[in-house]
Length: 205
Image 1 (cartoon, rainbow, N blue to C red):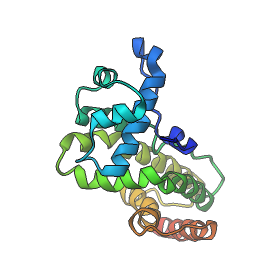
Image 2: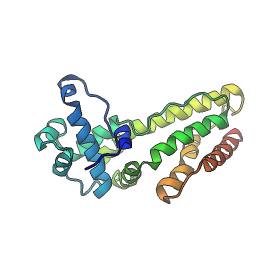
Image 3: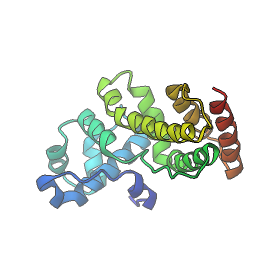
Image 4: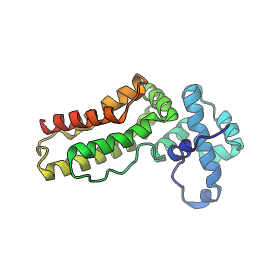
């Protein structure tokens, strides 16, 4: 199966320590194959044997790393850099929001990310381990929102009493709905509008 270069950006797990480092290329191939298969058939129908085959690895190589599908999913979801990106200080809340939305758009436009995200949200009610596995993503998002809001407070753009949890939801939801739920497009102009409206809403909170 031909691999898109962007797949390597989003779906290569962080390097484990110890002996597994010597086989990191196999781990990376299994990681990409796992998310590709998840996106193709959904978590419920995902077969680890097929993942190993698509990765060009043996079943033993996969099971040495992960003993079950839920353990593999939980481990990779907790380690892979799906939603991690830097937020440069641009000097204003609106510009910071635009930078955040531009980076988020790159993640949400990725074909595998879209399919896995939708399926994951459907599966977490049936598989508690998956819900626990996505907490690192949620915590990372909250930290970035906190950083962005703290800058705005320091500049006097946002009141200290602003609700950070609601702000985090507000920053993500409109773009997520447009790209993932409805399958729509998001242009630079669309993001600029979102940034302007979001900045106004947060400042008025």
